[in-house]
Amino acid sequence: MKKSKNIIIGALLLAVLMMAVGYSAFASEMTFSGSAEITGEWDVKITNVEVKEVSSGSDAGTPEFTNNTITFDAKLEKPGDKVVYEITITNSGSIDAKLENLQIVPDIINGSTAISYIIINPSNELLAGEETKMQITAQYDEVVTENPDIKTKTITGVIEYVQK
Image (tube, rainbow, N blue to C red; front, side):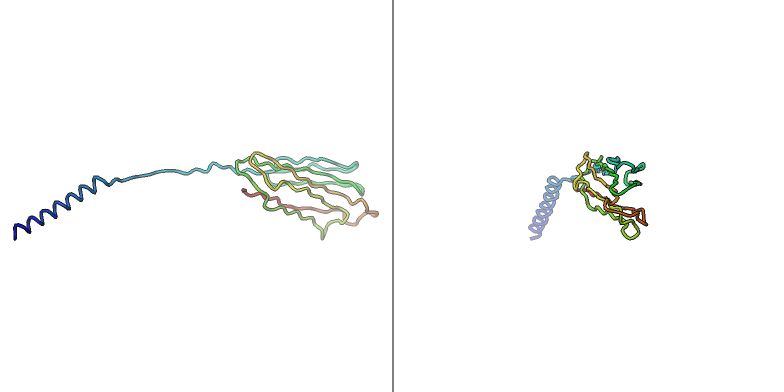
C-alpha cells in the first residue's frame, strides 16, 4: 500500500510539474507603449477692418483692431449720413469653427436716438483656412429735423466662435 501511495504522490508531483512547464511554455508577457499628440491649431481672429463707405462731410476716423478687438469712431455731419465698416474674421487654424454668440448692444439709454447701427452678421460656419466678413453701419437718422441734444451713441459687441 505504501508503494501505491508513493506512486500516486509521484504521479501527482509529475502532473503538477508538467502543468507548470506547460503553462510557462504557453504563457507570454506582452508590453505596449504609445503616445498622443495634439496637432490641431485654434486660430480664429480679426484680421482687417476696412471703411467701405463714408457719406460726404462725414469722417470714418481710423478704425483700429487687434486679434480680438475693434475700435472705431464715426463722425456723422447731417441727417442721412453714414459710415460703413467691414470687419474680416479669419480662421487661420486647422479646426473648423461655428458662431456661438453674437451680441451687439447699442447704448440706447444714454445714446442719441438720432444714431442707429445696422449689423450684417458674419457667417455661422467658419471652416479652417477660410474667412468671413461682417458689416457695421453707423447712420444718422435721415428724418431728424432738429439738432439732437445728445450727439453720441456707443456700441459694444461680442463675436464668439467655438470649435465645430
